[in-house]
Structure formats: structure tokens, C-alpha cells
Image 1 (spheres, rainbow, N blue to C red):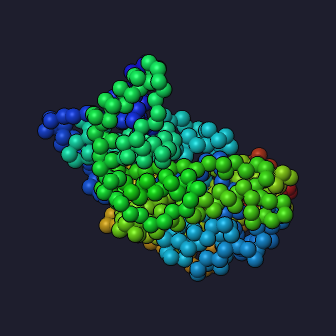
Image 2 (cartoon, one colour):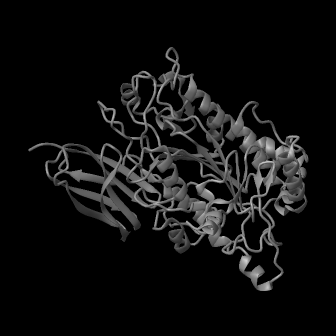
Image 3 (cartoon, rainbow, N blue to C red):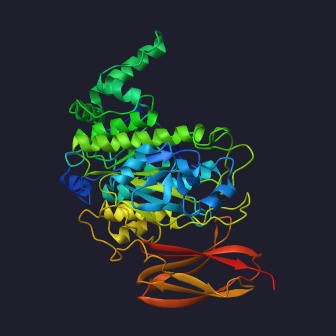
Amino acid sequence: MKRRDFLRNTVPAAAILPAIVDGYSVKAFNSNSPLLQALMNPTIDTDHVLVIVQLSGGNDGLNMVIPVSTYSSYYNARSNVAIPQNRILPLNGNTLSGLHPAMTGMQSLYNENKLNIVQAVGYPSPNFSHFRATDIWMSGSAADQVVNSGWAGRYLNTEYPNFPTGYPNSTMPDPLAIQIGSITSLTLQGPSVNMGMSITNPTSFYNLINNVLDPAPNNPMGYELTYIRTVANQTDQYAQRIVASANLVTQQSAYPANNSLADQLKIVARLVKGGLKTRIYMVSTGGFDTHASQTDAADTTIGAHANLLKGLSDAVKAFTDDCQFLGIQDRVIGMTFSEFGRRIKSNSSLGTDHGAAAPMFIFGKQAIPGMTGVNPTIPGGATVNDNIPMQYDFRSIYASILEKWFCVPSTTIQTILFQNFQSLNIVSDAGCRTTGINDPNQSAGEELITNYPNPFTESTSIRFKTKGGHTLVQIIDMLGRVIRTLTDQDYTPGTYTLTFDSGPLPTGVYYARLQNGPIQQVRSMLKVRE
């Protein structure tokens, strides 16, 4: 890679050369060209904000959102880490599922109609490497596709196609995206340059707005560092905007102490209220790789995972309450994600191993409240290799937010995500168009996808019902992999039949997955010997 290309792709778009301001890497340009100013105007005028919360390590979704309706299967698969049924937090209007007892904050948000729980989110060929799986989620790409840009970065590039040339400007004087607690991630990487800037930690943020510098060593290197900081503080337009916005907010509601995620989200709320036009914020918290000692041996409701879930739950609850206190609750939604879930069956070390699909949380006043999807299918006698079958592709979550929150046209979304992913009813459309399929839940007990015969030996007929529009039928194995796509196209409303010829596939359980807009259903099938 040429040095120029390396710099364009790795240096945050906030720095023409790396100019460090107490943890910031920033860049500023000026242009008085009317043509350039016209080109830099965003396509979509919106004050909506998305906050992305990364749970690094692979979160155990089965111990976070617990299947009450199939509790015996859940308990039998992981008795040494399972949450006792009488300790599961109930959810208003939902007797089928509950939350980990440490998640009282999320329980309150659900009961206040400010939380959507999306069940069993994954992708067709799950990868169990932390690094590769994280890249897949951040890039919004297929598992067999290596992409050097992020889904949010590509979205911002469609809105500000000439960035960073001519920025900041009167139309967009602020960073396009801000990441707190880490270097700028792949999520915010655009096709050519990174579309975001980073605040390495909350301390550096407060040092910046209070004009406090970390001590420089008393040597020639320290003198140079002090000089660079002074020049950067004098010329950095982004830093000036951040300081000005932060200083407009003098009071916020309470946040939990000793909670790094809460510290990050408190900064986000302050900057949004202070008037930054930044569209995307990203925060993170780690430690979710719970192979061992996930719970306490004597009490499975406490331990490492419980502490992580409490930290997440308390931080998100405090942030959502603060958004209401600051009067920005109609402008902000949040989304959690982890690079993968954990296996259905626990291991002998009081832990769980790398798995596939897991739940996601969409939070905020503008989240459409409730549960999207149903409790995961847990087979009897689950083995250490069994995974939760996917109900929703994670890129459907991205597509839904782009379409309904940022009002991005469907043709542009397909360019950003490389193909057509169906939109879900997880966030208010806020004046944007809708899919025309508004009921995310089928009628109680209605079977939308069936197969006959079941069990089968070689082939089985799969019958499905669609309300019309984009309809997808896939076959998933017990490892959570999509092994066959039977159809992926537009249909008129009606009932249709397809044949699944299993060929040389081994005997065992398979799943037929239907998705029709926001509606989905998974059907278990059994292949047996003749």
C-alpha cells in the first residue's frame, strides 16, 4: 500500500497530519468555493442521532434475554450457569421472555416502552474469531467478503461525499461521527478516509473542555509536545466546536459511578444537547468473552457476566433518562451489538463458548417498544456444537435504521450494504417512508412456514405464506450456518411451495427460516435415515 493511501485509510479524518489534542486526532480545512460548498451539503437534512454501543468479546444472549416459555430446555442445556426461573426479571405484556436479574435498568426501559429487543440476530455463515467477526459486523459485509470500509462510514460518505475536503464548514461545522473510549474503528471508515474522530477516554474529553493538559516530560521531547499541543489548540476548529457545545450544558441527570460505559454515554448526551450536528456516536465496553467463571458457582445470578450486564443496563438507563432530562429524547436512539453470541450448551468451566446469533437492543423514546422475533429454538439434548438459529440478519437492523431513522432511500441502502436487506419495525420512521408491512408479529399460533414430510429422508416440501414483497426462505444447520437459500425475491401475497432436496447432508435437525419484511418464523425439521 502506498504511504498516501495508508494515511488516507488509517488516519482519522480529523487530522491532516496527526495533531493530538489530549486524546483527539483532528483535521480542519477551509474553502470558500460556492461549488464545493454546494457539493458538501448533506443529501438528507436530519437532526437524528444514532449511538452505537459495542459489547466486545461475544455476549451470552441466552443469559441476557432468557426464554421463559422454554425454560426447561434452556436449563437442561446449561444447568451450571442457568438463571433460576424465579429470579428472571419479568417484562410487561411479555410472559414468554425475561431479563437477567442484574438488568433492572433495561427492564424499566422495556416497561416504559423505550426498548426493542431483537431476538437471534446473526448472519448466514458465522465466524467465531473475535477479530474477523468484529470486522464483519463493523463493515456490514458477508462473511466471505473482505471490506475495508464500515457500514456507518459508507452511509456518512453518501451524505458528505467530499469529506474531508472543505470541512468543517457552515453547513457541517462538526465531526460527522465521534467514537469515545477507543481509536476510530472500522465502523466509521469510509471508502477513502475515516469519517469519524476519536476521544480516547472520558478524561481526555474533560481535559479538553477545561483546557487541562496532561503533564509533559521535562525534556526536549516534552517541550516539542507542549508546542504541538499549543498550536493544535489554537487552530483546531473541531476542538473549539466540541468545547463550545460541551460548555453549553451545565447540568445533567445522575449517572452511576465507577461505570466506564456510563462515563462515555454522559459525554454523548452532553454533546448532543450542546448542539453538535454529529450524526453517529460510538461507545464500547469489553469483557464479554466468558469462557470460564461466567457466573458464581454458588449463585448463578452473580459473577462476571452479571457485572457486565449490570454495567450495560445501568449506563443505558441513565443515558436514556438524561436524554429526557435534556429534552433530546426525540432525536436520539441507541443500538447494542456484540461480535457474536455464545453456544447453547455451557462448558464445564462455568462458562460458554463462542456461538452465533444473539439478541440486540434498540433503545430510546423513538424505539418501537416490545420484542422483535421469538424465543430462540433450543433442541432437546443440545450438544456443545449447537448454535441458536438466526432469525434476523444484522444488516436488516442497519437497513432499518438507515431507512427509518436517517431516511436513506432504498437504492442508496443497497449500495451501502451491498444487497437488499429487509427492513424491520424497530424504530419510529419519524416522517420517513415505511415498508408497507406493518405487523412485526404474525397472528398467535399462525404457522407461516411448514414442511411435509417431517421427519424426512431425502427431500421435503416447504410451504410458506407471504404478505407480499421481499420474501426470503433459507435452510440453517445446527451450527447456525445458512446452507441453502431456497428463494430471495419479491412475491405477490399468497401461499407458495418449494422443495428442499437435502442431498448428501447428514441426518439431524435443520431449520427452515422465513423472512417477509419485519415478519420472520423458524421451523425445525428432522432428517432421518431411510
